[in-house]
Amino acid sequence: MSRIVVAAAALLAMSGAAFAQAQGPQPNAGMNFFITSASPGKGADLGGLDGADAHCQRLAAAVGQGGKTWRAYLSQQAMDGKTAVNAKDRIGKGPYLNFKGEEIAKDLAGLHDPAANKINLETGLTERGQKVQGRGFLINMHDILTGTQADGTTFPPDKDMTCGNWTKSGAGAAMVGHHDRMGLDDSAPAKSWNASHPSRGAEGGCSAADLRSTGGGGLLYCFAAN
Image (cartoon, rainbow, N blue to C red):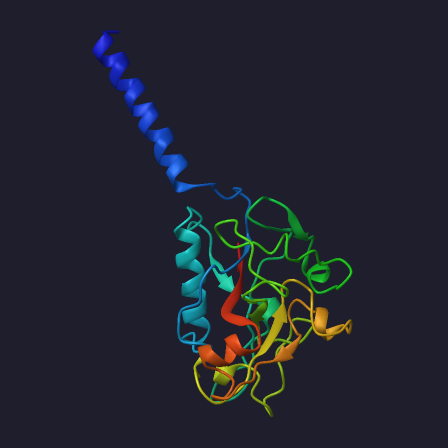
C-alpha cells in the first residue's frame, strides 16, 4: 500500500472521528423512550395525535433513531367526532430504556406503578441525553403533556383534558405529569409522572404562555411502538 493511500485512509479516519465528536454522544441503540428536547411551538396545539407522533419521529431521526416507529404518550378523548384512545395502548410493551440504556420501567404495568416507574430528573432524558429542567431550577419545565389518567387511560368526554384533542392553543386544559416526581406537596398526584394536574393560565390553559406559567414547555414523552 502506498504512502499516499495510507495517509488518505488516516485522514479519513480522523475526519470521521472528528465528525462523531462534533455530533456529541449518541443514544444507546436500545433507546425506546425520551422526553422531547423542544415543543412544536404552538402550546398544546400539536396537530392532534398525528402531529405529536410526527414531532417525536423527527427528533428521534435527528439522532439516528428514525428506524423505529415513535409515538407520543398522549390520550385522545371521545369528543368532537374522535374515538377514545388510551396513551398506554399507543406504545410498546417494554422494557423501556432511556438515552443511556437505563431501564425506566420493565413493562406497561411497571410504567404505571408509582413504585416501579423509575422516571425522574436523572433518568427522564431527552433524545440527546440531556436532563429536562425541573422544580428548583431557574426555569422549571417539569410539566409534561399527557392528557391521561394515572393508569394510562383517557378521560371521559364530559371535560376537556386534552386541549381539544391536541388542537387548541387558547381556551381549554390538558393533564400534565411531573417528570421529576416533585410538586408543591407530597401527595401522589404531585409526584405523578403522567397525571399531576391540569394546565391553567390567564390565556385559557393551552397556550405556550399558559404552559410556562405552571412550569411547562409543551414537552412530550415519546416511546417507540416497535
